[in-house]
Image 1 (cartoon, rainbow, N blue to C red):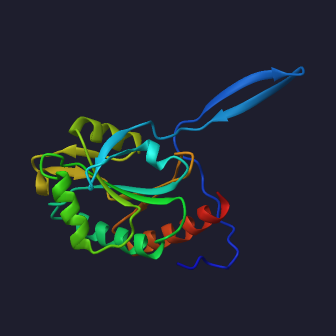
Image 2 (cartoon, rainbow, N blue to C red; image 1 turned 90 degrees about the vertical axis):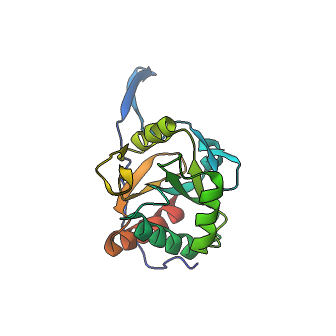
Length: 197
């Protein structure tokens, strides 16, 4: 993978609710910003190992929420995530995380089979499963939607977002994982974040 040599004026915001802490130092009022971060979590990956925020600490990561039997947007999202994971394969401190919102069906074995069928070679792309409530809470923590809906195709609804998260677990941007223009913007922003983190 070759990073772009062109200078970029890109900057990425830090998303989510911010808190402010004020204090006096040497008689001067100082204000520090406390940025929102993804809270600690623990799930299980497609290899049957525990995986969560601890394994992502100090890494940039791209996350999405999906399910393997999704009849609508997930196949497109998975193809686009596969392309990104292959393009950035081997980049230090970068991970890809696809979190299933259908733990009843998407067991470790099913997720591993799904990963194998995609044919990717990036060992830093993880497919995660766990308890339903934990997963839905995690989607909320990533500030995207995920819920059961008996009227939706496949019985579940979820965001089609790819979520770019920096090494401090701060959300930097969202992209529509089904749209080529958004995925291209993610490529550019990811290159910038890799070079500037």
